[in-house]
Structure formats: structure tokens, C-alpha cells
Length: 320
Image 1: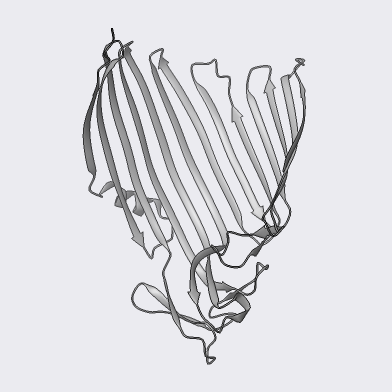
Image 2: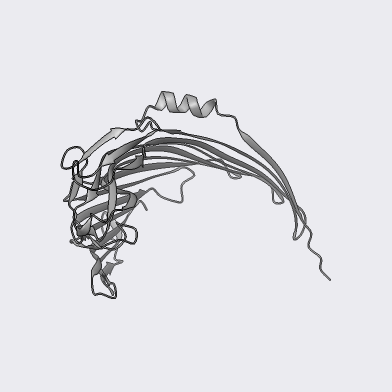
């Protein structure tokens, strides 16, 4: 169930050209009447006299049930949270424009998410456009799902242990787009995006009980955990008690990639087009790392062998 009530004014003032505010709420239940979505939000959109535009959206998420956290296991608790999203765009009539989008999310359990994405669009000539969009993400999750281990002694969670870990993710990307039109029938498009993502997992733990967001950290709250020499950990969840030990793979990893596409498009007759495409893809993943080091990760990406693909596509329009 979703409801939205809005107010708008289009009478220009000394500073503002028009303004709109929307108060909305969204509710969702499953077939057991567990509330799994509860969102109360306010969106405000302002267009200024100089045609700059700003959008501020705020969300309040009261505590709900989470039917996805255990990936098909018992329902869990979703802590109350807040979110703010801000978007700013300059006058689109100008040859060169700038933009900014940022998002903040945090909950009462200590998780938080932050993203920052400025943008710059340049038009040096009427037939050439260059768009640059870097993006930074910093995320901290208190409980990221890792695995489910069957264990008859885990009676509080119906014969299985639902294993989670704390995740810290730092990601940096830089997107570049170039559109260059030589003639009405001949154009060139370029897309490139290098990306570095560091994902560090720690404090492996299990859900204590259904309908909660409470966890027992191995080696601190219960049981023990130790490296097993094979890139993972051996967990004894209850020490001297009868539960059998099990293993967890080290979830930490760093991912680096570069994707680039260059497309030459020639419409050699009306409706008939020739595409010449070059694509380069290079990527690697370092398991068991997790920390963010731009110099190290960029060097690793730069020295990774590339996969290059050259493709030709020809379409021919047959008409009467």
C-alpha cells in the first residue's frame, strides 16, 4: 500500500522558479502479516531562477521484519533506519553542466552507507560531448549473510546456524562517456569505467534467535574460530558442547576491473548501418585481502592482461 500527497507552486519568486513537495508512505506485509516494508518519506524539488535544480529526499524506516536476511530461513528483525538523498544539477541549457548526487543511510544497529557521485558534462563543440562521473561508496554492514550450516543442536534457529559477518566496503569508480558526431551519418561513442572495490569481512557470527537482530560472535560471545590454513576458518560454535565444528571461507576480497567500449557507427544508406566495435575488459580478484589501497589496486589493474574483442555488425534495410 502506497500513499502520496503533494503540493506544488509554479509562481516564480525572487529566487525560486517552481517548487514541489511530496509526503509519501509505503507499507508492505507478507502472507503471515509480518510488516516487511515501512517507509515514510518527504521529497522536495526546487528549480531556481537560474534553472539549477535541487532534490532532497528523506526517509524514515521504522523497525520491521526482514524476510530476506537469512536467505529463506527464519524471519529476522530489521532495525529502524534513516536515509537522506541529495541531487543537484546545473542549468541544462549551458554547454558545460555539473551535477552532484549523494546518499546517506544509517540504522540504529550501527550500519551506515555513504555514496558521493559528482558529474561534469563538457561540450567543446556542437558535435562533441564528454561526460565524466566519478563515484565513491563507503558501506558498513553489521550483518552480511555468509552461509547456512545444518546443525541439529541449533534448536533456537530450527536446526541450522545462520552465519553472518560484519562488512566494510570501499568502492571507487570513474565513468567516462564520449559522443562525437562527425557527420549526420557517421559517429563515434566511447564508454570506459575503471573500478576498484575492497570488501573486508570480520567478526563472523550467527543469529541468536528468530525475529531478532542479535548475533553471537564466534570466539567472543560463544565458541571459537581459528584460521584453517586453507584460506578459511574453522568454527566450533559451542566449545565442549556436542555441536560439530564447521568451516567458513574467508569472504574478504578486492575486485578491480576496467571496461571500455568504442563504437563507430556509419549509416551508409537510410536505415542501413555498419557498426565497428572494439571492447576491452580486464579484471582480477584478490581473495583474503579486503583493505583499500588505491596505489596497490590500481597497479594490479593496470598490469592485468586484457581481453580485447573486435566485432562488426552490418544491418541492411530492404524497402520497396
